[in-house]
Length: 438
Ligand code: GDP
Ligand code: GDP
Image (cartoon, rainbow, N blue to C red; front, side, top):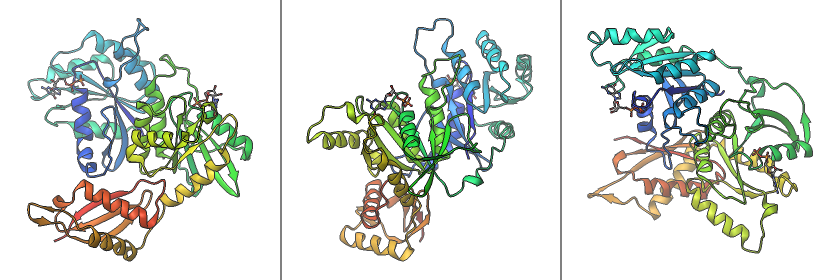
């Protein structure tokens, strides 16, 4: 199921980033021991009362100059109303309503998205009551007073936010069918590849429930296996803001990744890996999805015997944390190797869902420790008492140890490699957690 997207909007200095950090801060702390975890200032997962959502700090978005009429603040508000489910409109109790606040309010009013006003910088509720009431004149009935700086009111704010989440279609009908998402920057060839695959294989035409406005789903049968292909580029939106604004495609990718089993990161061979590719790949990795790196437009490259090797080296460099993902060189135009893509996705999905028995896991871990013991830290030695795979999608291992402080990232990385050598797991991230047991 797609996660709701919550946008934080407001003019500069009202406290958006402070609020953003306050909401996701705890979660970031929890996930910190995950190897390769990428942090992102703009987008992050948040959670309140067991409800997960994506939080977007629109304040970090900047836009190309050229459009002199609209400023960044109003464009940010526009992105929020176009792409998000619930909007937190942050205002500053200490300054009162400003012209920019009014501009934002005007944009937010145009569409009927749920809006919660967070009146920030309220440290003294009694003294600042009039400051708070002033903001009712913006015309949004749901207002909460908060202090992002000290945490006051954040729970009340999130109560209001999650009250607006609607249950989307249950995708039960699609259960058991592999969902494969094509992610990547505009123009890398996502739609071309989806169309190629649809052209080569038997397509089931149906209204697929769960298809969201973020992407177009198609159902296809390959070697008796049914796949749902999700094309995040398939929907070209008509928006008031530029169509190719990065934020749109990133937001759409996030959602599509969430509801898929395997993410195919499409990279244009003629341009290589960009910052946006890295960011989107990071979401697939952190989301624990099966991952494939697809180098498209391979037909356009002048090649010799070393091309594949050199290109691979370069990709591994740029996307280091995804070294488990198979790389496939294809052309959506000529169809070269396109038929290998979905069988590969099937394999990767199986690895992502693989479960290893506790006894096998412990055999491998104990053998590894025997050959390469954990380094000591100020005379103390890490002891791994036992290890267990606690879940799949992605495979998650818990190491029960004498002292979690003694487990270093590099040793965890070593153990991960040992598990991969023994059990494969090609194309899937692994989660490695440590828990204390005395
Ligand atoms: P942004 O530009 O909207 O992202 O705002 P920031 O989060 O960067 O905050 C702007 C300034 O307001 C900083 O100096 C913060 O320390 C301050 N600030 C943020 N939240 C609060 C708050 O709840 N109370 C007070 N007094 N100051 C705050
Ligand atoms: P999307 O925005 O990622 O869905 O990209 P499109 O599928 O719309 O492709 C963008 C452009 O690249 C189009 O002009 C395609 O014809 C072209 N294109 C896509 N795949 C290939 C390929 O493998 N080789 C070549 N030469 N061109 C391609």
